[in-house]
Image 1 (cartoon, protein in one colour):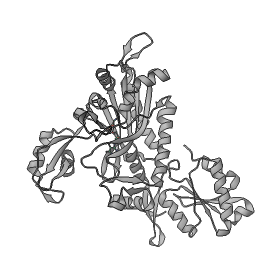
Image 2 (image 1 turned 180 degrees about the vertical axis):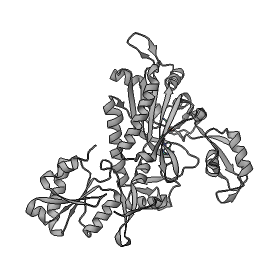
Image 3 (image 1 turned 135 degrees about the horizontal axis):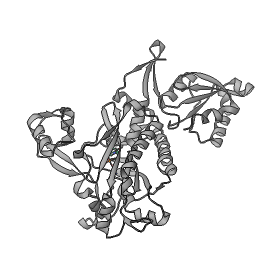
Length: 458
Ligand code: GAP
């Protein structure tokens, strides 16, 4: 086995771009800053992750899923508190009109300061007194002002304030406003959860770190409604479930930690929040969060809509359920999985092998099918078609280049197994299965091939 070379985020990004995971958005027009499109390989991984999320967070738990709209009645955002509170601290360098998040500047330059606890007056003082040069330029700082992160848009042809609305900054509110509908139509009993997968939008002041912080991203959120007396119990239950989930997908335990929020940094709605953080190449960063939202959201929507969102217990008492919310960003999870699995290995004769050690269950392709020689193409295609027909494996067929080159191409995109169809396939009904991680090869009887792969299913 080769030695590992240390992970370098720029190498990883380059690799992801050239091999078809991520493309620069609007590339032929010079790009759009910090905006990325996903290519075929990333789409395959994300589809697999979503399937596991549905299994673990919805199906196994007896929960249900909905699909609400990105644009909703703007009153939703007044009630939820986003119009008044969903802001970051913006500061501008007046010499070049560049704008930054004040907490990011302080975090970058003074890592010893706990920015989560600092007030905006303190951040402003530190920046004005100590940061005389930033981002390659001399500075003259503005005051800090709150900047609302919601994207504004307008409904219909008339551009008036009355038609102004917003792109959702989280999928959660679409769930709260449908709470009554789901309760009525499913006759669900507490505790139960409503989940949603979908795009969210935030006009981040400084999107950064590749796909870690972008203005358009996808969330997988569950709002788990429970009796107020059970909220602590379920808060801890869902924290554990989230750790188990990312571990199931293959993230290494040593690169994950749980970080409970300090009182000062809790969101406007939260009674308690824990982040699950991942050790990205640029440091520990929030991968996902679990929040105890109490009855904040349902109470607010009751107040603003004048509709009752109460729940009737069997003994006839009415309660406003409490909510535990595990909220996972799909893009961040994708980045963590790719970074976690990326290896550059030095082999003999100074050869370097790039390998993505993705778990079998989320790899873009799970099995590659190679005919050893042209003469074997039709047999290989027959095997490929048969596997497609009889399994749900993600398969890729490749007949071009030497076998060695074909192996390398699959290693680099994370395909765990390559099946080579050789002359023994015709004579003895066997194939050679080569493992990505160990590079070991096994002879497997064709009749046992499906069973061989089934052992890796989780
Ligand atoms: N409904 C709760 C909520 O939205 P959040 O902590 O603001 O909570 C949840 O977001 C998750 O969504 C984050 O942990 C992260 O994975 C993802 N996320 C948030 N902002 C993001 C951004 N600008 N780019 C990519 N992912 C983001």
